[in-house]
Amino acid sequence: METTTINHGVLTGNKVSELRDEAFSEFSNAPLEFEETASALWDGTQKVYYHACTANRFSENYLIYCNQLEKNIKQLGSFCLTKAVLEQKGIQFPKLKDMRIHELVCMTSFHFRKAHAALDGIYRDNNILGMTYLDWEFRWVVLCNRLKATEVKIQKIKEGKINVDSMLEEAETFKGDSRTNAELQKPKSLNINPAALPLNGSIAREMVKSEKESAREAEQIQKEKERLLKQAERLDRQAARMTGGFGLIKPFGLDKEDVALVKRKNAEALRKQAEELSKPREPERIPESLTEAEARKILIEDAMKRNDQTALLTIPKEDSDTLHDRWLRYTARVEREAIQSRYGPPAETRKALREKRKKKRK
Image (cartoon, rainbow, N blue to C red):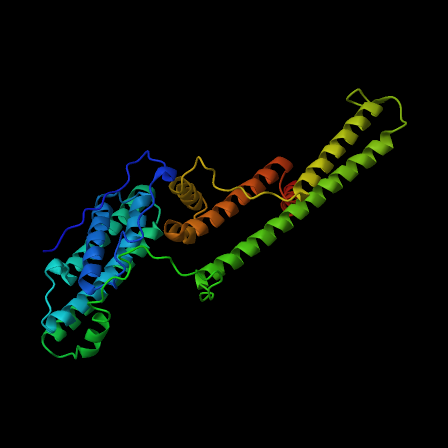
């Protein structure tokens, strides 16, 4: 008789440090079989689908659920194909009677319509083209078409038009093997330095982009430092010319020595500002008081203000490490803009403004 395991979670408010260790034999390490795997993933996908359906279409959570749901549906489409192969061989799966391509097509159709409604609503009320939702419309259509093509293949399998023997060998691999961790065992030594995985293209691009932004930031800081030092030097020269002079500066009625002293103080303050710019800046990590979801929301709002459609598409999908790197670049840019607002625009901008004023005078 088959027993049903009831899994419980951890109540909120418990400290992680107080949780008990789990037994080495808590779960079986017997190789996964098809019905168990597909049943568990189908159950998880149903949960994701429900929350994606009920989440507000304009919320960050909705986009996160969509990203996961898309991955799940692709995998379950393959499972439906495997199920058809095994059933053709006379194997039945009572737990998977509801797992069908038709159900997956219904899921994609629902969220195609939801994404379109979001796109249409944003454009109608704000005259903004929500590229994220437009992208999801196309993704759902592509996935829906792939599912329909899979259903055609399944029908051919049922009609005996496709040989299923090779597909059956893969699905039946390790079937019937028993678990080997029924008792507590001492794990083998872990490989400290495992072979490196292939380089992920998206990570490589992100690293190159980050290096370019860092180089640009360093260049801007250097220019700002040079500007401050030149301004300080100019004030020193002006103060030197006033030193030793007597009388008042017309028409303001100020003593030359006092003015010279003020200029020297200002020059010293500018040199200190330049020195501060040269100091290595500690990266501003995501504060502990800020959750990852809140940081992600701030970055999305920033991307919307800058009309950065690429960022709007990628931020909801980024993992924690990538999001953290983006947060560091965001805080660096905010700090750089703050510096520019305190000390005025860069030299190139000031030059352009001077040229503009000259043209107006003419």
